[in-house]
Image 1 (cartoon, rainbow, N blue to C red):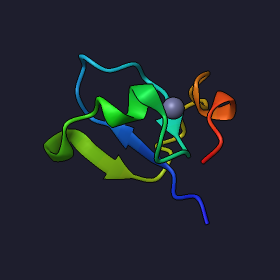
Image 2: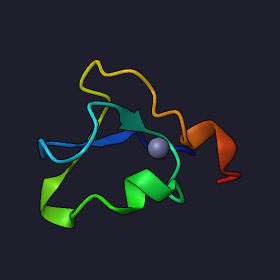
Image 3: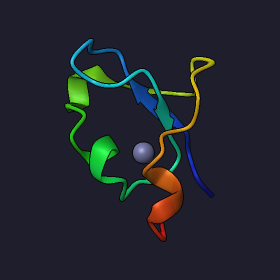
Image 4: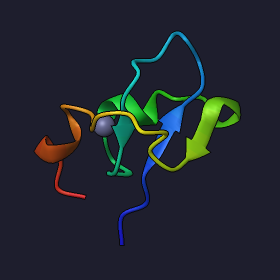
Length: 51
Ligand SMILES: [Zn+2]
């Protein structure tokens, strides 16, 4: 089951991720990571990764 998450840091794009292996999502620092979508659009990289 995919869990949506996003970053509260202004250094990261205002999107949410739903793949743990997303290259952009993996760059989010743990202290900036929050669960949910925050109403943001889905990251463009997430559909490209398999999990
Ligand atoms: Zn992503």
